[in-house]
Image 1: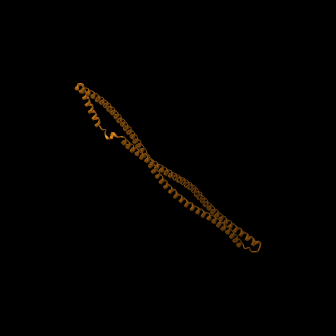
Image 2 (image 1 turned 180 degrees about the horizontal axis):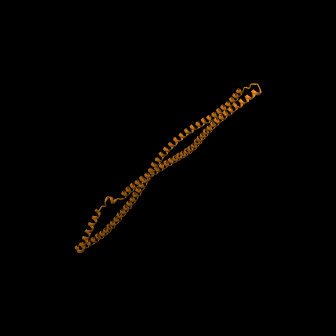
Image 3 (image 1 turned 120 degrees about the horizontal axis):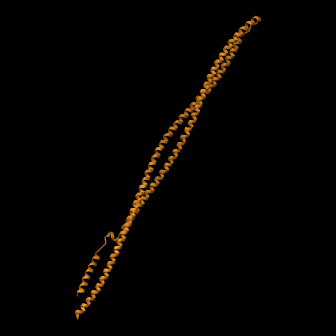
Length: 298
């Protein structure tokens, strides 16, 4: 009988444990964790896709800006080449103007020399005329003594004087006409070169303004590229951090899931062992009860 009571007590204890095990219910978050994990992984994938899309957009924008910078760079180099060509042309025109100015000065000097020479020739002509007048006067006296015929010396002198004067005037007119024509040509060329010089200076000033504008735009584009590169680096870092965090959380959740599965397996094993013990005790109690009933009936 004491053994029967002990077995009944053990049976009650096992029954109580069995009821407690039946009443034990896992939390909802631990009974079915796979949907939670899948939802979390799906959210992480969406975040990763957003980060990758943002990265692709920034890379496309960076490529567009690089193309724009290259275009501005080509325009800038073209403007630099135009400016260099204009400066070279300006130097050539300046040399031509200087040469023309020197030629003008030389021609003016020559005109002065020719005028001096003309004055000198006039003086010589006057001197020769005076000497000729003296000689003619002497000759006239001798002729009057030797021959009674009259000579028109005044007419001869006037004729010679007219010839000399005509030759001198003609030479002077030709020289003045030549140098006047040459001077007008030089003035015309000088005016043309001055106009070209002013036009080139205006073009150079416009090119300088264009170069400054392109330099400012190039600096702004470089700043935008630097900002985009910084934003891309930050986005990559945030994406890497988010991906690492998501992977770590996934590992933690998988570990927790595995631990929950292991714990559930342990509980199932304990439950199975308790169930086996209960069945054995039930069998043993039934056996003793049968024996007791048999003894009592005797």
